[in-house]
Length: 301
Image (cartoon, rainbow, N blue to C red):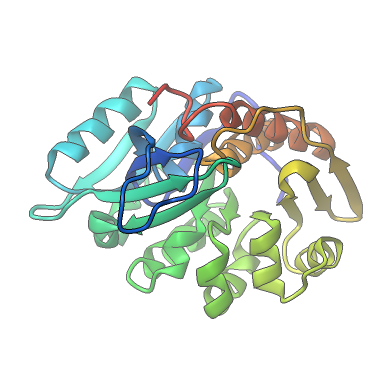
């Protein structure tokens, strides 16, 4: 399916709505003792971060998910609304808002300890017809398919988008859960127009450590595939077209959200009908913006 025309695109995103509590340290963790760190708190979750960056780019963005009925939910709603995201979040009575502890080491690499909380309560009923309208683009976080509790929502969203002839994209989200259960992702690939992954995720899904081989394998299932390669930039394929875009210079403080920002830049370009190399370059540019600051979103922590 071809991309939509710029100016008519409404982005509909589905995925985890989280509060990220990041601890950035420049020294090894002293287990069972203290390690100095800089702490920040801000909204997170792959779909939410991509939504925030799309809104930052001036796009019309709708985010579907679930929040608890606690103060963290209020914090999330206020922040995303302030960033211009139209939030369609169910409030789950008695549930806690999803929270993620993010440990960032001296190289900028992050390790995440997520508690999904209310995200497990997202329902198919939230996929209202008013959002799946002509010209919309659906972007789905892989976490939604990887979690058995929310898998049905992701599958229903992709089926509805296909039935209404909307374009759609899937972000693989995380290598570790894919490595132990690839089937839900492979089953969904027939329904998506764009697949976004990093090297580890592509390797976990295909079983191929070589990125070029993984790209070739994935293009047998999805028309447009983009693999993010960190400091190696990104490679992509669309039909018979292949391209590689180098990374931009950056001072890396925190890699959190770089892939989500990449998705926003790429999808804004792809849905505007830009050529593949130009859309990938836009993704690289947005990802680079996140690296020199703590946190993944466009707002300060």
